[in-house]
Image 1 (cartoon, helix red, strand yellow):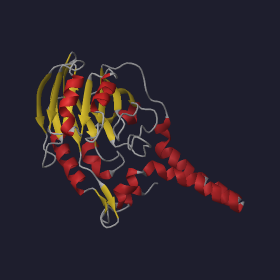
Image 2 (cartoon, rainbow, N blue to C red):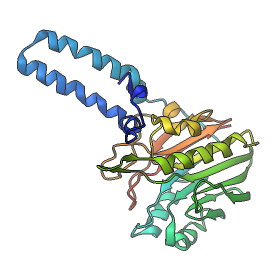
Image 3 (cartoon, rainbow, N blue to C red):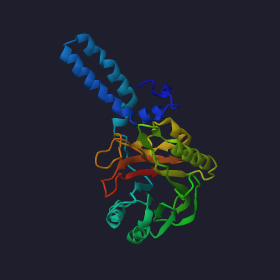
Image 4 (cartoon, one colour):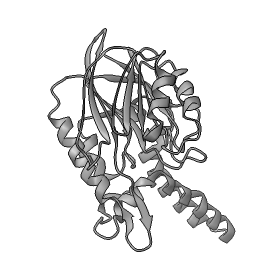
Length: 285
């Protein structure tokens, strides 16, 4: 738990793999306690206190409810799954959230269906490749952010009543776990570095980054993106807010990060027909 940063990534990206599921190391505590009880060893039972305390020091704060009232802007992000059998139903469920900004990833061929279903609630939208942004406030400009050979990220400037905000919607490349290659993250990591470069050159003070990162914030390879940004879930959530897979989430790979704004609340929305769960946050200027 304490030395995960020292696990090397050179061999099958083992370090990133461990960090992706780092909170689940806490399962070792009841397992060790069970072994101590079976052996009827008081010494072993006392020794279990150490990993329990370490886990609590690392993740105990995450379990606390840090949500508060207020907020000027509500943001929702969702990987809708290109194989979603009911895109219109998913779109209507997301619109019912009342979010001011709605970011969607993995639109695929269903883009026209989302555009029609969201037109009434969101008069402004921008789509670049497989990602899109829908807004209740005017979108001044939008363009592709080059993080992959095909469009998987966009930057848009939304003109809110409080002022302009730069919104990045990104879908980093997928990762795979195979016996031959291990945890394959090279393409995702390269995309993360390209995205980080774009964020470093952003001139607007208020910046929002949302999307499917295909990784958790504990993963060291995503630090170029997360550096200088604030996680809504970390600062204003209640619990881990796991998002994937939707049927039984084991990792939070969908994120809302901000710069120049303060998260007031963060939560996950009910599951849709996608394999991810939507994430939401209220932000204050």
